[in-house]
Amino acid sequence: MPNPSKIKKSVDVAKLLNSLGFDNEFDYQTGLLKFVHPDLEIQFLTPALGRGKDGPYEIRKLNINAEGLRYMTLLRDYIFHMIYNDITIWLPEPEAYIIHKILISQNRKKIAKKDKDLMAAKNIGELCMRFENHGNRLKSIFSEMPKRWQKQTLVILKKVSPELYSFLHD
Image (cartoon, rainbow, N blue to C red; front, side, top):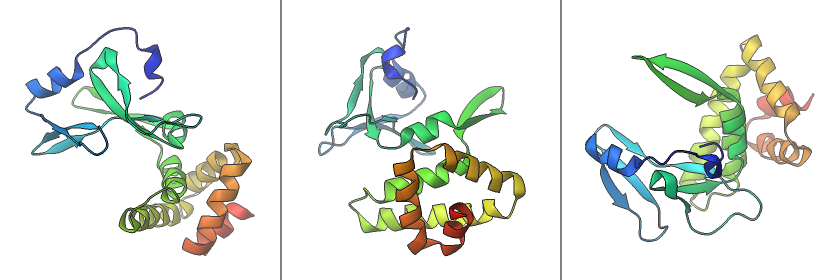
């Protein structure tokens, strides 16, 4: 969600989702609220900037809270849209998603989640390399990142995918 502080209109998203058949599920350990439906689960995310914070970010104008995640700017800044049943859906570019998964993996406390992130990034990244337009886009996004993020990404890729490491390192 880009810049929650700049939301101008108040909308009760929780009430709207409840009217669509979603149930509220509150996690007492994290303080996060997610919305659960038999076909879909929704949890809101926002960039964690600066030192971040331990608990969720309250977005009062939408009557929700959001988990702050590092490196979310990658998913926010590199997006494309699709139209499905007259609804515009904004999604992160696969190439930005790959790098995001690599970077957040280092902060995962649960090994299973870390491994899942790295496997997804490796598989999608190695597929993207095989298509010139996606490979070029991956290199472009990588080169636009802060140098510190580039170094972190390469350190992880050297262990996880020598193929992707070589592709981005040259």
